[in-house]
Length: 410
Ligand SMILES: [Zn+2]
Image 1 (cartoon, rainbow, N blue to C red):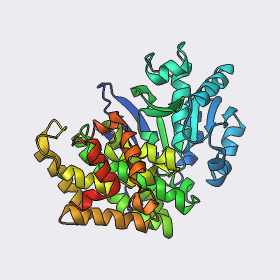
Image 2: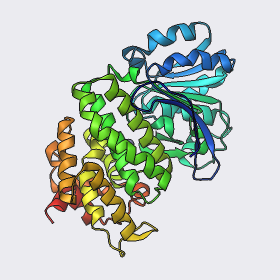
Image 3: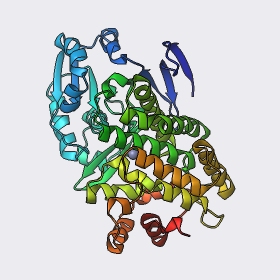
């Protein structure tokens, strides 16, 4: 990565405004400007002035707009410009929301899109911008029946949670007829990410916890992912350390420092999955969320320690990583070091204690999901694409052992 720091403030955490050149799987490099510091949002007016932006398409989570305090900062910025607000959508983007957004967007000319909210608002904005410039129906672009050619309008992503890291990725998740699709195109990476910890100060503990756990899991999985590179492991390592140290405080006794640290953890974890993608805990989590309503981050975290224990047992025979099982074990050993423990059992215990400290069930059993029938169903719903990025092949029996906790008893 090429990184040019052009501004910093005096916090002990390295806060920055910089230009990043993010490596993309297709080897085209797309740059992104990142503003990550206290009061970053106050820079928006000058950014818009510099780009002579008069007409804005705003994809807005209305709840977050008011509760985060963004309204007070941005009302005067928007008052002098023509702003189309797109607010009618539900959590987890659906293709119908994207289609409505595209229709609204096309109704008049816009110079730029701004997304303010969590992962849903940002993912929607990515798709509305990119799909609007193409003739093919949104459904075809979302499901891969038509290919995305890129080059939509500029996008400014302003996250109001510290979790998904969507502002740092070139993916967008969308549900089409109940099926989950992940749209991936280098140009979906937002041109500007404005990450202001101030917007997360008022988040309730439960949301801070589940979104923070998502960042923690995304970072952990990025260390063992088949798609990981030295660059993505670098981001992930820093994110694990920051989240492990700061998430409990951000939840129970929030300070500006812990909120800033979680913003940085979440952004770095996003940068890590942007390259390396997620693995087993994510693959198995989607059904836990859709069938039991357990928030994404909490659902992913429930199998994190099980996946760590399972992956530690990798052999040459069941290894999916091109660099082999010794390399995978070396990466997993790094995780033990980051958690400050000597063996995998202690690491699993540390992860589950961490989850308890942030008020989340450490296992499916603790969440009351324990009958064989329920667990077998969850194992059958696993996302195969994500599973192929896990360093060890898992059979349905393996998945069941991870889900029912037997992995710890072997
Ligand atoms: Zn996630």
